Length: 177
Length: 165
Image (cartoon, rainbow over all chains, first blue to last red; front, side, top):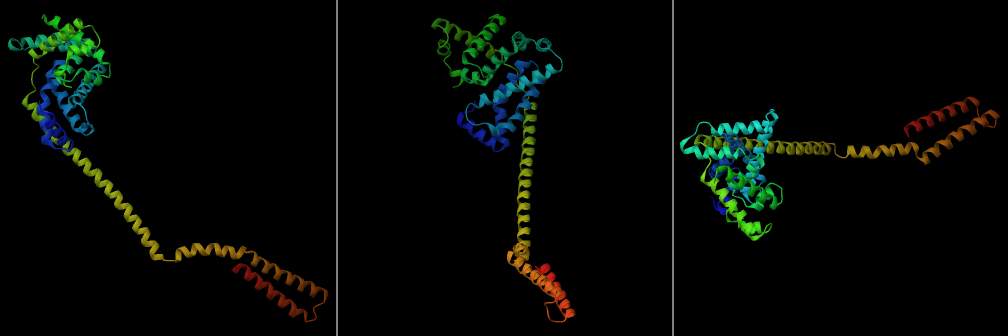
């Protein structure tokens, strides 16, 4: 991960429209953001689209980033994009249950052997409700503190803690650990 | 504070008892450990290259838009200055005529409706009236035709003065 001074320099370059600095941001965050989208959708194509859209949004909005946690700010955009995507899918008259079964079937198809455990996690994640799953992914991939996550989600820290605790406990049970 | 450096036990202790807080913190650590042990796939290099190219295109359009907006603003300011310059030159070319006219107009009106002019006209009309009465009563000793001609001349003169202001 980039040191905070390096990150500040990169962000400053991005704000002044330096394409190389934006490329650096892509290199730093694309893995984590892709993981976040993939774990939520279980679909590579959709994750590719969401990741591309996110960086286009980043170019548009980087000027509005002030102080505070850059990761928090970036993952808030990612979270909004994910929910926008869900809403657009729902508008296409597909219920969440259909989406969930789609994610599950996509996740279970194909990959075996070395990817078997990854698929298992994806299947079990599909059994959690969207909000809990999103919270777990936000915490894991953004590496933000509970305080920051609570702020991002506009809820009390106690609520965030309790939701995440319940969600991870359930995931552990589902994974048979 | 980064999430990885957070003291989960301390955080939970704000809401639950010591032992319970420790268990909850442990649940979270183990849960997140599962996620760490099962990494999500990484994005393709091709995708990353596409994203970087897309960013370059977005930046180009953004710069073009900024340039266009700046150019429009400058054009608007330049047009404003040009308009101001044209108006100033026109005013300068006309010199004092324009303003004088505007000053003269009220003066001319004042002359027509001025009390002193009004009084002069009234005095002249009264003079003509008294001459006419004198002529009718035969008081005026001079020739009647001459008196009428003189009266007509006076009337014409008074009429002319009135319209001249």
